[in-house]
Length: 236
Ligand SMILES: Nc1ncnc2c1ncn2[C@@H]1O[C@H](COP(=O)(O)OP(=O)(O)OP(=O)(O)O)[C@@H](O)[C@H]1O
Ligand SMILES: O=P(O)(O)OC[C@H]1O[C@H](OP(=O)(O)OP(=O)(O)O)[C@H](O)[C@@H]1O
Image (cartoon, rainbow, N blue to C red; front, side, top):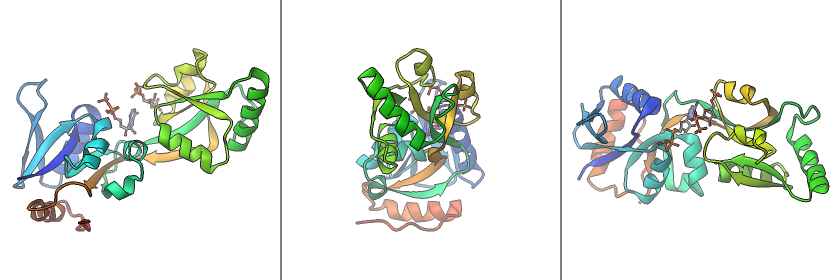
């Protein structure tokens, strides 16, 4: 048996994850052809690399099919109910920063806060006969945030990409999406509500409480020592 660690299979998240572990003496690399999703770990025994889509790593952790996983803290919170019962955060990794925010058209000059959005949503419903639409792929985080802040007169519409375009395309009035440089928002004439930063995300190393921690406990202890992290408490 080996300790399985899930890592994003492509792009910046994969490269920066490899760099982060490499700087701590654990070398990760993709093996095989450029298109083959296979990987190897050197510098520690008993660790197996599993290359996965960043969006699937929360589910794999919750199912216990991987022991550890690197993905965005936003994805774990959005995809898992009661995420902190199923996984634990071992370490923020200091890259992959993005803020999940709510934005509205920049031309809505009297809408700058959640209270303004709430008022605009009521007026919108009265005028149009349907609820103001917020496009997002972060359904759980957005719903929980708006409920906690007393905004109720809206509907979520699903958008799995190009979310900032939905306002121009008239399929939504507002959006909730991640932003890093803010360029996509500006280019699409959207502004962030001043009090609507839902979550500040970064790539994070997670541990699964659901995985089978038998012989893998010893490997975990060796790994966290090598990475300079404090040993986590394992449930069960
Ligand atoms: N500028 C950015 N654009 C997109 N994602 C970003 C950005 N900055 C950081 N991230 C983070 O990267 C993660 C998303 O990664 P990615 O898009 O590879 O996942 P994915 O949706 O599973 O991709 P795919 O399904 O295409 O494999 C999220 O945690 C997100 O917060
Ligand atoms: O603030 P910025 O630096 O402009 O980055 C934010 C954009 O990056 C992401 O999109 P991505 O390119 O991953 O495509 P997507 O629309 O398919 O999610 C995100 O969904 C925003 O659209």
